[in-house]
Amino acid sequence: MREPTLPSGSGGRPLAVLVGVQLPGETDEQHDADLRELGRLVTTLGYDVKATVTQRRDSLAAAAVLGEGKLKELADLTGGEGVVPSGAAPRKSKARERWKGAEEGAAEPEAHADRGEHGAGGHAKAEVAVVVVDHEISPSQARNLERATGARVLDRTGVIVDIFHHHAKSREARLQVEIARLNYVAPRLREAGGASERQRGKGAGESSLELDRRKIRDRLAELRRELEEIAKEQQNRRSLRKDQLRVALVGYTNAGKSSLMRALTGSDVLVEDKLFATLDTTVRAVHPETKPRILVSDTVGFIKKLPHDLVASFRSTLDEALEASLLLYVVDASDPTHEAQLEVTRHVLAEIGATSVPSLVLLNKIDRVGEDARRRLHKHFGEDAVSLSAHDPADVAALRERLIAFFDARMVETDLVVPYAKQALVTTIYESARVLSEEYDETGARLRVRGLPEAIARLHATFAG
Image (cartoon, rainbow, N blue to C red; front, top):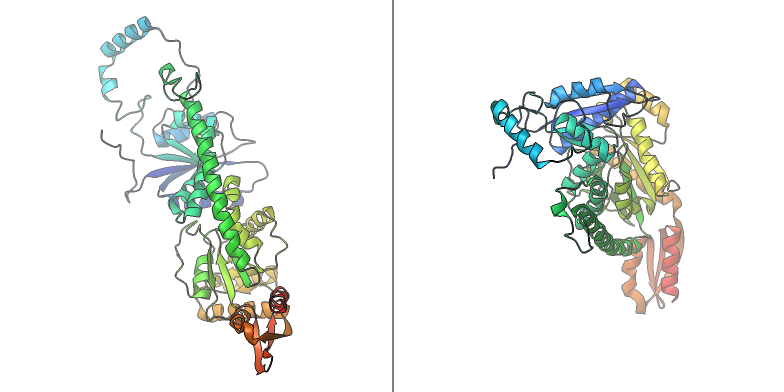
């Protein structure tokens, strides 16, 4: 059987129509910004945006999100009928079906032949592959929109989950995303087939829908067990780094965290001008290396209306931020919605309890900002915020010195005596603290060191035993 080809734009990509409803309390600027962001999400997913349909309403229409007039307008773009068919199935009668089939066969032979090129309402063949709604909608609303438009329907959550699915690389990220996808899909399952599909599961009378839902529950349990095992391994690795200097890059998706990570550490982490290009946490040491080393972690980006299931699934990844010594809030200073984006980042981190971690705001991509805008940024964020471009070596070097100064201000000095029998542990001292001086006498090595109080306490405990 030949696979159907998706309708596509001039670049060969499938087409999408965006749908937005402006609700009370939402300004025109906020509404437009949300739709622009949705357009970027849809583009990241691989579609070209053909058009946008918007409407002001007190709430989403219970049946199909939009009112009757706007639904017709949307259907004109997709080739659908623009009406929601009745959900009640007609009563079946074999005699009536034979009579109806004979009548339609005699009166409308051409209509049946043209079904491949026209919708049931005689509209031109649909050019749109997907309708994307900038809200979280119910399964029934999605089904009704599909019936009215003749196109696949996704809400904002569905788009984000699909993007995560395509971008997940590591085993942990794939498990996290599959959990979120199954949680999204489960309530949207529909019964396929009729009575012949029933009683094919373990339980008497278990329908295909019930069986599919049970399979999803079993799979979710399995995925969570696997993820718990990985989380334990991650926790063990983090515990080995607990006394080290740790910085976490956090911020809105595409704010430039990966570019900054690459510049600070000299690593080859993925850098792409796409939303959610990075889903896996990467930990690298600042380069050139400091004594003790400063570790930098690049975390998953945030976005407005980030699905709760994804936040929950990526909890182990976000723990890097929770356990860091310093959070660097990376902000795209050139984006007009940067304040709202920063608020989203802070809100998500508050959900995991990371508000008590010391932080610093980085106004990234400052090279794209004019002088007047720079003055406004400095006035708004104050002197503590750091303006920089991740592509400017001088800016990155200045940030490195700022990080060194931050940790140096928290350090204390102490003397350590390392007996000759424990000389192999001197390497541990160099990894955990800055050695200011080192002398030897009959008892062993005497070192003057400077480090964080936690690291110093651990070192004293090690050499006291």
